[in-house]
Image (cartoon, rainbow, N blue to C red; front, side):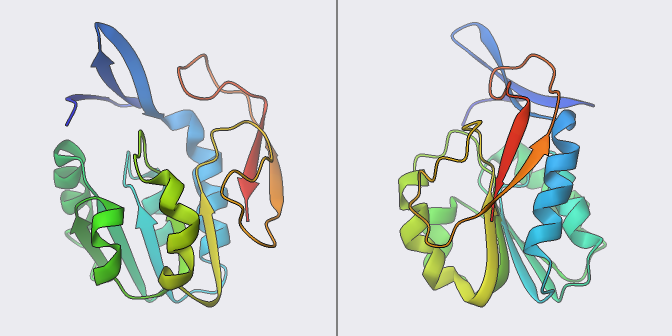
Amino acid sequence: SQSLTFAEDKITLTYAEEEFEVMMNWEDPLMSASAAYVCEGGGDVLEIGFGMGISADYIQQHTINSHTIIENHPDIISRAQAWAADKSNVTIVEGDWYSVKDTLSTYDGLFLDTWGDQHMSEFSASLSPLMKVGGKATWWNNNGSNNDIFNIPNLTWQEISIDPPSNSYFNASTYYLPK
């Protein structure tokens, strides 16, 4: 429900008179790696959170059957809908992922990247009903470590060296992509 500010290189919000970055374009290589992983088997891909559309652009570069995007922020929903207007394999689902999860199908790939998500503690339990056997899932890992906070079985990590600009949400030099 917070008002967002969109710039070419970032999305921000202001809370208590302080500006916080929600997403920034320096994440591009991380979004590319995440999309490549969840699209490895092709098929049907679920993306939870559209943000700046960086990962959505990368997902569309892969050979997939369908691309379902869940977005709950009104300012971003309209941007996601405009982005998807000419993409016949994209469905935009409006709402909170946790509230709509039981209306969804199952997927070969899943990428979760939300900001301030109150349902993150439910992610692990929600994975199995959303995934096809052998599916690939990942999420934005802002921990700056390979700490398995969701207790996902058989989790591995891809280390990606990065040099983000100073920001309010991630300042480590290594990103641990969960797989």
